[in-house]
Image (cartoon, rainbow, N blue to C red; front, top):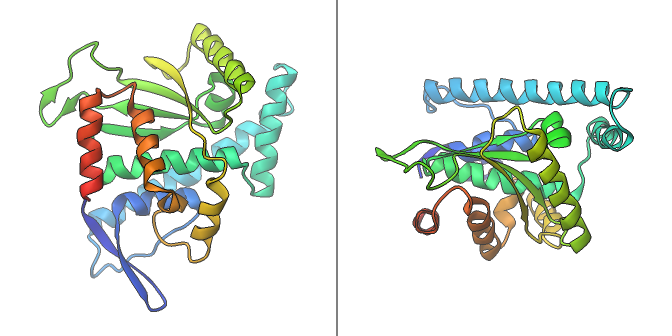
Length: 255
């Protein structure tokens, strides 16, 4: 895990990774880099990711603003778009959305910093409401020069993530996913899966601990190690083999 640069806040200084810098954009934390010590390629890539992040936010706002007033969709979907629009307008997020962001960015950081054969993509609000996708896991075809056997694992996986552990919620969400599968997704995914992890008592304390100083890496750095392991194994279960997941996790622990 390569440290890209050093973060300074007052008298505090710590080495940070490229994955931490990039995922901090989701927490509205932006960095200014010293051209004398930070490579130009890194600074250039950061500016590209920063621009993409801002454009996605604008797109999401445009979609929710349009769809919440649309007469072409049913009341349930209009209510979903309206709720997302109000979150954007008021600059607030539900506990569930905060948990989703923490989980997604935790996995994205690992994928970047350990150079795993994995990419993590956030869904836009249209994909969230219409396709029931919170984010997408994409396994790259090659891992250290060894081609993945066709059919061994899925390559593109849509994830619907929830911290709501109630049985009726699980039933409702599984029905939504089945409907989304029947209708198909413009993302041409291999599968859609529901992942349920109980973070209800952990999200807000992690956010509060992080907000005291807002160190690089986001609030997920304050989640317990056992929970991080559970997130890692359950999210990757449908896209990597058990042996591959265990090997990758050992790399995480070593770093």
